[in-house]
Length: 145
Image (cartoon, rainbow, N blue to C red; front, top):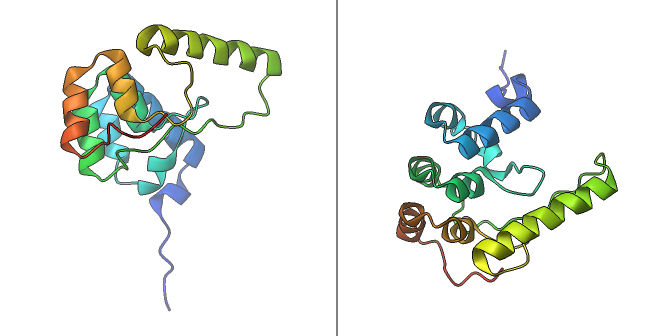
């Protein structure tokens, strides 16, 4: 009798794993990111702003996490893709986006998020070590945002 291979990700709560993976990348929790990095499906996971684990780690200056993700072949130039959040109150969503744009504009002189890569976030955050790691892994400084 043949046994079907079932991904451990499908046996767990994918939403919970996604949230835990992204939050660990944001906080710089190496142990948790290392635990989940084998699940390649999580590399496409995004937070409500459309950020991946690589964006989150780069934006917070977590060079060790960025190295770990890149070692496991997370795409280095993956852009931000805004996530549709229909359950959110529309007015609150607009306020949240305005706050993000104001912060980004203050940090980098730019006024849009869509299309930004982890390199853009690391530069805007002034995280030189993360910028060096991303460039060492062929992140393109020429990707337009």
